[in-house]
Length: 281
Image (cartoon, rainbow, N blue to C red; front, side, top):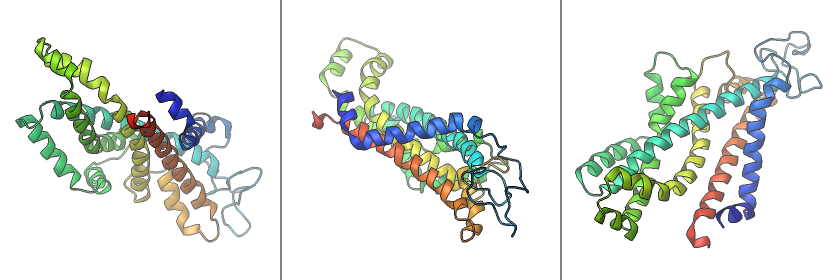
């Protein structure tokens, strides 16, 4: 029933198509686009006035300010952005789920109070500001450090959602019966609590991917992301802003990619939420 409701959701299907397109572009784009994303072409990539070449048969999305293939750089940047978004979401979701399940199961006890106060303090800071502060403290920013930073700062909201769902599940009869039969706490959490909170976790995790991609793009745009020459969508947007009047494709391409990624994962997440919601039955 859940899968059938998801398939009937047009918005969700559009989101799946967008995500599949982006994943395919990230996986196969750098192989299909034969130009080197780091190589400058001063012959075909520049106009007579010394400006970046516009979209053409040779360069489908034009050339950037250093006369490099914009499409090749966009494809390579897709790998970086999606890898960071998915990996950071995996870290944040796993950490938030563990904290939320433990906190919810021990509701109103000392461990719950301590964990939720940590979450409250973390949520008091804007997410991007917190990420930038942690990123600025690092000597060197690589894809690994950025995804770990995003993962370790993005679990707070997940913990809140999982805690609320765990509290609800913990008061059901099958959990109370497991306690009465002497089941161990780890066994109850693993066999009874965790399977019943995976639905909300999946929804939150899917939406979090778009937030991580957006956060990575903002960091790159502000110069706190992966250092050049590795192409990222955010840094491509930063490089193209000075040429917006003469070469608007330098802004349109990375901005469109970021918009599609955020839109696609959000649509999938909303579709999953509507499909899992028991009120839709």
